[in-house]
Length: 340
Image (cartoon, rainbow, N blue to C red; front, side, top):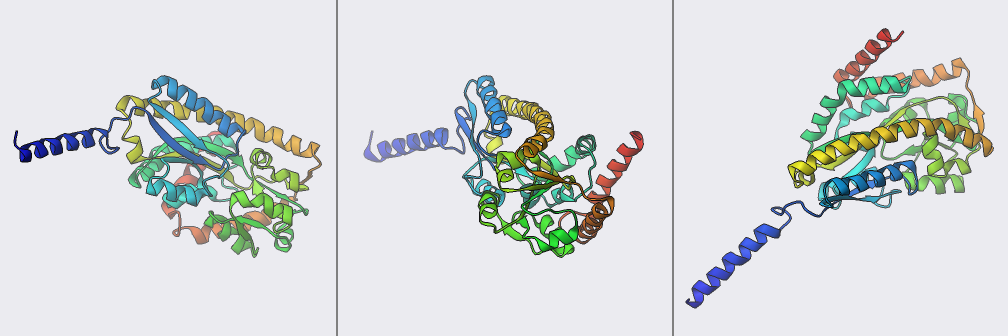
């Protein structure tokens, strides 16, 4: 064979090998999906993901597995979204704050006092599931399953029972959550923006006096050790979801895609039940550790609700649409009418 033909043959051979082994064309066997979350190591969230990963590896014969990055080690939720976008990680477990950064309609779930119970949450999410999943799919993401934090309450180093109390205190706001900023602006509260990993230090140094989280998360993040009071008013339901980049998902074989989509809801449903139980128990744990429960009067609660309503009106059309807001409210009315 002549020298040019040898070179040509080698070139074809190298090209063939490249096409077979390059990430774009390779089969998905041995795929590791890197997933980031704010949930701290040792928490019920991480334990659930470890169980999910064990069954995922078993069902796919180790062809697919998760590598979880807990506790915000890869940054706050906006950082996670950026890392997904550039391909450094393939997925993330995000709350409504991070989810709304991708699909703005998710901000509707950050409206305070919109839900009164978990049953209402489950009903509305069931009705809107297909619409929301399509919204993320259009942005290049697969919403694999709903996660949960629970109902958020205020925790503080000073007693907070009213809006006036809140205006006098140094209040934390999550810098990834523009809806929270809109509410505090409406209330006349000059909130201090911090990322979630920085909140504990903020409490330790006195930079902030008021924080907010579901009780279980406050314990997992150790925030409750630096607070003295909890205002027993469920403010916002903290929704969450497992997102995976569509291009990463599509590299899995069809069989393994199906396994992934079956296992994620299975384990997130287990997590939901555990979180709801633990949130009730967490309040008692905090009380045993000396946290005092503040129960505002009906008038004081009404003051919070009026501010929330004004903030919702201002945000409608900016982040979430009036159509989606009205749809959520319609489903809530439908549920409440059927369950009087």
